[in-house]
Image (cartoon, rainbow, N blue to C red):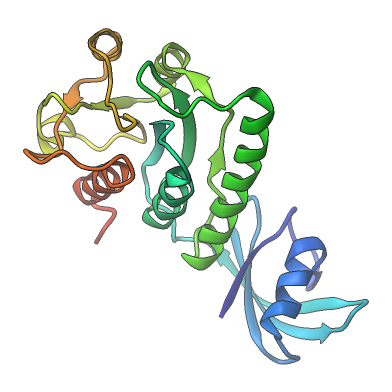
Length: 241
């Protein structure tokens, strides 16, 4: 069953698709009578049946409504130091599939990738499209947002709004199960780029209340570490059951 996100709430029993959603339906070659699911910004999951698929009109009749229950009960923000090349594309896609709620690209001291402001705007647009596609594919209840790129110090400061933060450090730390003794509602996770973090960055994060955590004895690639960390967090908070 195809999965879509509406731009607003759906007050009536007929929903008219527009923009990218309408184009996607045509690409999928959905026909009259086929079932679809539409999730609203408020988290309402609407089941529907396609009524019309034409160049000028793409509509579905709403047949059921319920609260979308596909979201984890912990809101996890990934503070990801920018990796090289197109690795961030992969990180965004897979983290959305695994249940990330928000992604904040970070420029840390050892980031090799340092795009200018104009390039960052284009990259963020691409990452947001990837997040949308991954949310549709994995049947999420929200479209995780990719925020503007910030400095490491800014990321640490804004992370203070989270109930809990974890600093995944290549130099070692405590296992996640020892840090997450209780399930927080909001949690931030810091992941480094290929070069990891500098000592001063680690000290800043730890002093701000983000304990250092380990992902084991092996050093993971920049695009592997966030997936491993998020999987552990989801398991530890009972969101893989």
